[in-house]
Length: 426
Ligand SMILES: Cc1ncc(C[n+]2csc(CCOP(=O)(O)OP(=O)(O)O)c2C)c(N)n1
Ligand SMILES: [Mg+2]
Image (cartoon, rainbow, N blue to C red; front, side, top):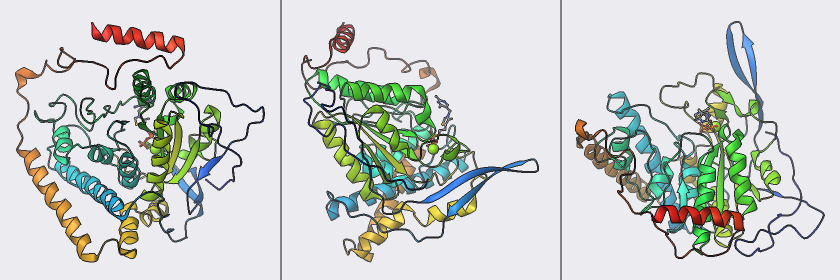
């Protein structure tokens, strides 16, 4: 992951009218990948065999101190403190979930976003009420920012009757298309991308451009549907905001064994859309890139691909001890803990005093305790109800969200989408 300077101009910088994809008016194409990072880690992971064991070795320089945070161009101190609070809640909630799992109260596994809280929380914080999000399982912080309570997520993991899926699914496979504009995570990697592109198309058909944010991992981004989903958004100039979470591992496979490009943001060039690289452990960088991408989406200028570089600090899920991860790599990223760095930044700027910080942490812990007690005490579903609520039983009306469909996309897309609206209205 060494540095490489990338030159040129944003292919879609010219402002295009909503829904009217236009070819670039020059035969000379040059592209920029913006890189917001203040530090460009330079190391590779190599697979080595020692006797019967396969190990990974880290080669490169892991000695440097963590960089400072990059000042945000958009966030006020109060907003950054709010993001810090969400990140703390995200982390402490996952610690509580780990304990609930160890107490035998969780049905299934637990997935963690340890080390990725800045990416989940600061990106979701850039959304406005009318925007949409499709989080992945590690983005529980995004669910919190979008308005789910910690108790909702805890009850969901415990399959309680009053959980968002009423005990029909475990982990964070939950959404809310009525109030919070959250598409439930889809386990099949990459499938959220065309779905969120479709959400942006749906809004466009109703005369609105919204930001439709979703996430994909360094492993998942190699799926075919990822290509199809981004390409569709690019061609139709849809407001997809795709956060590629490069956390260096896909299960036990290191990123260096998954793709040949140096930075996954480079793939944006192949789609003809802007690509941005951020330090995924720096909440300010994540927010700024997401904020700009969302604003671009709402202006009808199409999708953005943001690569957030960070490290998955636990195993794939709770069952995975991640013994394959070299210790020096963990040590390197522990020093770049997103919450510690943001805490230091806020204290250093005097935007938060030590006392205010202690109060904030105590407040988060108190809230979590109340939520955990509530979730533990909540009843399980009645066994007789098991067959219900799995498929839609006419339980909700499907109707246009933003207004009346408008003629602003290509004919074939319009025909397909209108056919869908007609079917749904019947
Ligand atoms: C299409 C598809 N293939 C395989 C899987 C099984 N699977 C689930 S998570 C995972 C690893 C994902 O790694 P990455 O995309 O890097 O995300 P991370 O877990 O690091 O957040 C795999 C292979 C799947 N869910 N969907
Ligand atoms: Mg990964």
